[in-house]
Image 1: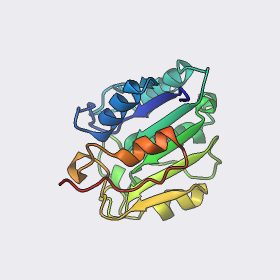
Image 2: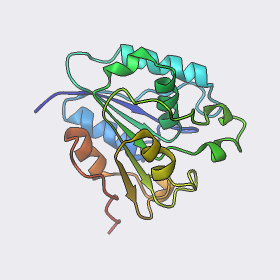
Image 3: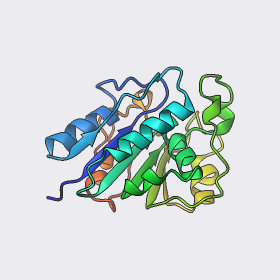
Length: 197
């Protein structure tokens, strides 16, 4: 088995609840012997973009450089990653591949003063490494659609999942085997989580 490092980045108001798929993913990757960073980003309820960018740079600098680093970002951390890329953050080169899950649109972020500054930058740059996007086709936080709004201008592949909403706990995303498969094998398809029996 190839040992990798993983960096899992949460979104706004996320205090890493145990039932969330990111917590589930961190637990399973750790159990498989991988090095996993799942930091609590500062002031998750009232985040500051520059503070989060500095923390992202620090997390990437401290990542294990001996193997592949895989980054999995959800919601607000997706646009954090885009801001870092737009600013040419050199630490992004540490990431071997990146998964952006349910990025919110600027039109939605603008409604909330706490996160309005995170509204996505102009997508006129090239991402520094292999990046994939996955989002629901009915995400209330991206009514314009993540495919046309993000994947197409960035030129990255996208998996648009029917009925997956924001891919969060409210949408039923506690365990999510497909994202674990993708983390281990970057070619695995990203599919909806199985319905509860």
